[in-house]
Length: 388
Image 1 (tube, one colour):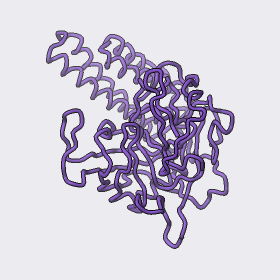
Image 2 (cartoon, rainbow, N blue to C red):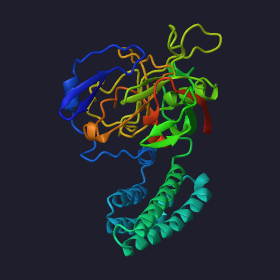
Image 3 (cartoon, rainbow, N blue to C red):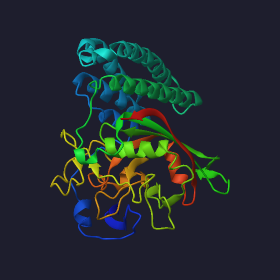
Image 4 (cartoon, rainbow, N blue to C red):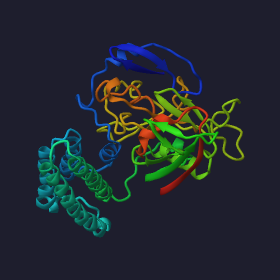
C-alpha cells in the first residue's frame, strides 16, 4: 500500500500488488516523514544511476556535480551560471587528473584515458553553444536553436561522464548475497533493456498532443544495488516472458505489467519443471551501508529515515510489485512509477525502503504516461549486460 499526497491531503491509497487490498494504517505518519535529501529532489534518471555506482572518488563526484548543474541552469536559462559550472568541471578535470586516474582499476586505464579525452572534447561544443546563446537576442529563434544545441551537447557530455565513472568501479565488485538465494539469477554490473509497447487495435498513442505508433523505451537495470531483483528481471526478458504481456494497471500513479495470467490464479513466473512460482525477496540498498537488506524493509529494521541508493524519484523508475503483506512475494510483475516531484515529500518517496527499485527508464520515459491498460509489450530484449 502506498499513499499519494496531493497538496496537503491524503488523496488516495493504492496497493502495488496483484491483490488489491487497502489499509490506511500509519499512512499519515509516513506522509510527514523527514526528507533524506534536502529540499531539492534529483529526478534525473542518469544522474541517479551515476550516484548509484560504487565509487568513492571525491574529485569525479565534484566534476559530476558541476556538469549536472550545467543542465539545471540551462533549464532556467541561467546561461552565465551554466558556463561557470562548465569551466569548473573543465578546470577540475585537468588539475585533478592524477587523483582521478589513481582511482581507476589498472585493467580499465586504456579505456578510461580514451573516455577522459572525449570528455574534454565534448566540453568545447557545449561552451560554444552557450556562448552563442548569450550573444543572440532574447526570445529569438536563434536563441532557442542555440539552447537546443547546448542541451544536446550537455547530454552527450553527461553520457560520456557515465562511461568514465563506470570504468572507475572496482574490478570484480559484487554485493554479498545470503546463501539462501543462491538459486536465483543475479545480474553482474548493469544491463540495458529495450521494450516496445503497442495498442492492441493498432491505434496511436497521444502523448501531450503528439502521436506515436508505438512506445519505445530503454531501461538501465542496476545489478550493483539490486543484483537479485535485476537478475530476475533480465532473466525473464531473456526468456521472452514479457513478450505479449498486457498492461494490467495504468492509473496515473504507476503502469504495471508482468502478470502471467491476469484472469487466472497464477500471477508470477513458474520455471519449467516446477509447479510453483519463482519468488524473489525484497532487496533494498541503503546509502552508507555495505550490506543490502533482504526479506525486510527499512521500516521493519527501524531505518525508515534512511535514504536508499536507488530512490523512487524519477519518472519511469522501475520497481517490483509484490503482495502487500508478504515481503518475499515478488515474481514477475513490475511497474514504472509516474513520479511527480510536486506531489512527493522532497527526497523521500513513500515507496523507498519498502519496495525494490532496480533501475530507471533512461529514454522516452515521458511516453509511459500514454500507456493504458490492455496495451501489449510487443518485444523486450536485453541489449547490454549479463547474468552471473
